[in-house]
Length: 544
Image 1 (tube, one colour):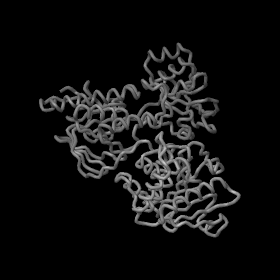
Image 2 (spheres, helix red, strand yellow):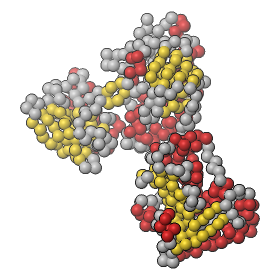
Image 3 (spheres, one colour):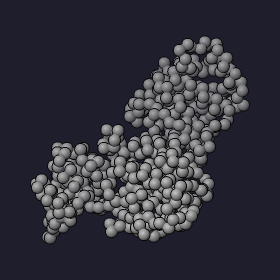
Image 4 (tube, helix red, strand yellow):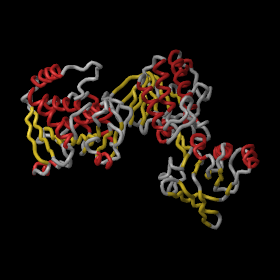
């Protein structure tokens, strides 16, 4: 039954004695319905019978009834395969398609013990996540007797069903016994979890991560416990959970500052939606979401993170008062790491093909298009710089600009023209099309409005950025002519105690530079809190 992993096997008699002792202490009986078919998986059926026979010899807590799969009870309970075990079918929807063999023997025994105890020992954070789910969850966990990680994931699902039988059902499916079901869900790696027809987890998870994945119906790789406190006092509050903010949280906490990170949207910002990152030092190629998970996990070692929480007001003073959508913070310093978002074209196909041919970063994604044909939309310095970068790495790029001349710096225009990169002026991309990825763009020529179609493999868009400065503007932080936050060499703004870092400052829009600025800002804040510049009557960004 796979009850242990030591090199020296425990004698069968000792295993039976241990099980007798465990079952003797259970306060509740366990009802089992066993459905079989002489034509389906006879070897798995006989193995299950043998295990059940052994268990009934050592405990009277199990009440077993066996039926053919054609029995009315099988239809009542929706049994679709044999052998099948149903556990306490009148109080919960928990079934097993397979045999309790190998590693899955551990799962089977633990299910029986959970049912016999009548209590589920979920952690408090996990219970909070589960209690917040208010719609139906139909769960399938695919397992194998040879998988040492499957029991953990299966028991996570069992606990969810036993704790919330009102909304959760579970089928544990042995892929060796039921290859047809495995093929139907393409479940050829285990453990694998589906809920409501969606793949929500691959591999084993902690119960908190499992329940978070179940709640959001997509795989979660980082669990952040919910914080219920209505007022929190900190040294450093960081607004924004992108590379700058996460790095600032690490450096601030390591310097001894009580640091928290508040993020209203997606942790990681633009990085989280970047398919592949190939220019972050130390990681030759990494999915953007994976890089974010690494950063978030690291930051959580030092700082508390408050995801899905918007900052609605900052009141300058000492201390600074920060009101979010959920609570009140008091802080000695606030770092604005709110980022900047690329401007969108707003044309059909742009959102659909993001990450599948549409990109806003030639430095990030350009190497993926070497030897292919793309267009660069834009006519400013960023567009020409990125177009030249693409050409230098072997991408066939054409620039499309809606005006009759470029708006870039003169030396960039001269360099661009010297490279012989083709350009279409007075032209606009009005649609991006394809099937699974970008295949063409529709271009409108002005004046006249004539339209044509160009076959391309990718569309790069560089029409500027929109810095996220709504919070900064509300508290009187000075902005640059380009709309970014103004700051001095130590990331100070003109408002005492308010700092900035990352893309919201302008400059290069790269993960590594944002992270570096976050580290710089956190160290500057530490030094300033030890010796506050504002006490001496100095200001930050304007130097007056």
